[in-house]
Length: 341
Ligand SMILES: [Zn+2]
Ligand SMILES: [Zn+2]
Image 1 (cartoon, rainbow, N blue to C red):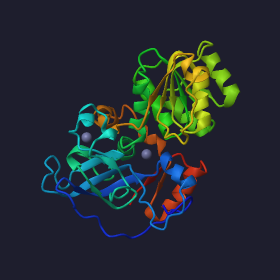
Image 2 (tube, rainbow, N blue to C red):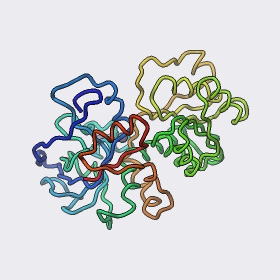
Image 3 (cartoon, protein in one colour):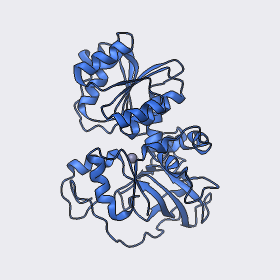
Image 4 (tube, protein in one colour):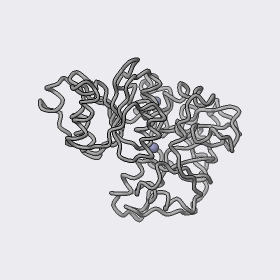
């Protein structure tokens, strides 16, 4: 990406092993993320450009001398951050705070919207999935474990969603819809999805939402309060990242409840004072999901078809069409775009 609305497909040198812990991965599937749309709106023009993409499935093509758990030919899931798996934060499951890790597309590491990628700290980062073919029908669902499914699940676990809960989910993008699925898996009884795009909220109903609220602002707040017994929802999962969504969350959360945010915040000045969070004793939670911590946990139900999070993909494109894929997601013509090299 060279700036707002400026995405180009370019031929670059193949990645090579640089560190003994690196692996080279041939990308089998990648995709465009809702979070990629933030720079698509606001990135200042930059002649250097930024490699894009942080969600991928691939096959290991080569490994550095210190890689011990992966072999050439292994099929792997790549989480949206790389991490060593051994530092104090990784041992706590907080892989996104890894002392030696980082994010794709920065610090000399490429992006995953590519044919190949150098993966640092490969043993700690990649999750091997045996027995997967490069055309298996389960690939889209596996790909959601790179980010959107784990992120939706993180929203729900950070809010401590449990059996019988009433949960409100703000946002009908891929993460919001998969937060619905996660809340359902964790036993929530009532799941109120706030979103305005009927085809998306229909998928939310399929994933387990019990109610859809299309209204926004004061009207939306009143509707969610009405549906959740008058005082608001005890668990609110915010999967957008813009200020109106935060204000919506503050408006619909029940006193004593939790707001769990996983939409990357595009603001730094959200209210936290007496009138917003302090007065009603609200817990504000969330952050970048350490999806690496959830892949093994969520994998079995994906593999046996109990859940099909891959339904969030509604378009598949080749590399030539990637700039148009960004446009389609930005214009809400596509929910989530899968890239097949
Ligand atoms: Zn993503
Ligand atoms: Zn670490």
